[in-house]
Length: 85
Image (cartoon, rainbow, N blue to C red; front, side):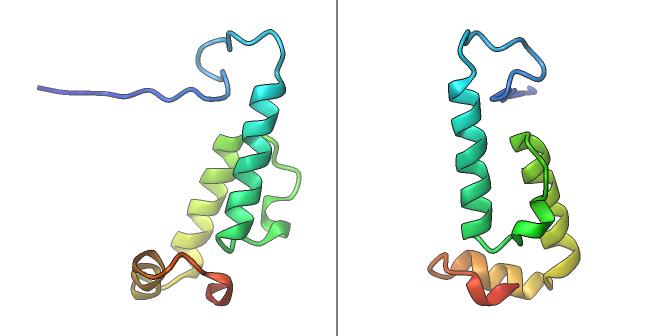
């Protein structure tokens, strides 16, 4: 049996039902804030507006810049990663 879950939080695959994009913009702002809080450099996110691209960029950064053991240490710790980057 196969199961798939589709998350289209920004309406990139299916048109968003919200007439007012305020919700999408707030989601994008929260995504940016959280990624920065987790240690992703502000400069890396640059002018990226879409949450999906922000998350992909952050994932690429972590994969390239952080050693696998350090990632485990960060993920198993208290969530404070300011010293990680």
